Image 1 (tube, rainbow, N blue to C red):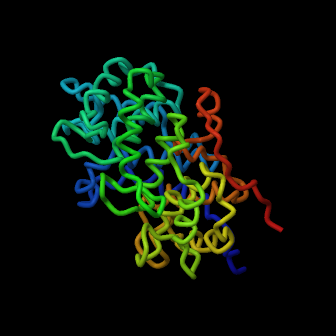
Image 2: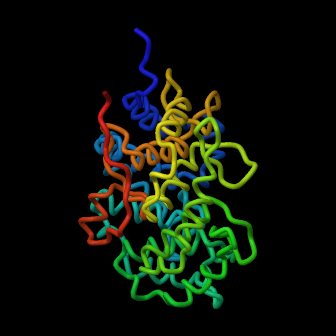
Length: 329
């Protein structure tokens, strides 16, 4: 019997994620050590959204997170023996919140580490080396919110920097003067949503810019004249969900594009059909499908990129709107 091309191959994707940590003899495993903690977050979240929260050993995951603690910095590194970074610190927090295990960390110390990375301009650095980016501003806002420490943030200064990164097309760049990019749009819009400052977004202008990211094959790109990529199924849709404009996308064509990027033999989702899969695109492909209302998936909160019920239970839900969960005819 031919496979239904509308089918998300959930069992295969669950197996793919479960086997990722077992390839320790592969060179690629060691070359991606700098992404290990992020990759665990991507895998855990994808599993929860696919309705398989038990697929990874919770205690084993938590032990790995604890092994990534950087005692000197007060944050989490991507891998034991590496330096703490704001991105992997957020991943650690997201996983622990998802597993209801936030009490395993020194919350005040982690919050202090995050706050220490804000520059006088209002933007955040990723680590002590000083690279700045609006991504890190979102990460700081997200992490502090999940920790219950958002009151420690200089919100006005944070919002002011994001405002200065807004462009004539309604989009946002990684720094002041940088071109609009879908991923930067997400981080800026989501940060403003958490801070209750969406009044700083030109919703209609930005909504049209985001809708124009859809190409004839249904996939979305990050900026004009670029190729489609499954990860933008989240970056674009998340911002549109926060702005209540997901309906401006052709959801059927985008769903088909994401599903056509699956590895139908070993599981996983790639950036586009025919390419090698990875956990990053698997996670964001599943996240995009959830926002699109794909049947059988768990609702994703597009602001925090976590299971919606977990964010709602913490009293942090904002006014986003995904498509209604559909059923196959």
